[in-house]
Image 1 (spheres, rainbow, N blue to C red):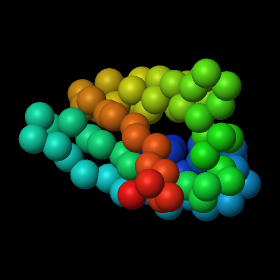
Image 2: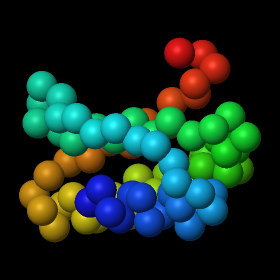
Image 3: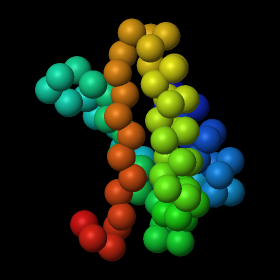
Length: 79
């Protein structure tokens, strides 16, 4: 699933976007994507359509592996 997310993010932004992965207490896989400030709009899209689509793709893949996935976009300027 890591390769799939990396492929999607690179395809959208044209460059490698860093992300981290961990499993929360409920056994869900959480991906935290930390794009450059200029790329946040590209990844979220109008009304959040792009990020929702990325989540949907990851959830389909996760369901095939009997897992649950959460995608978070982290803004470096606020953290």
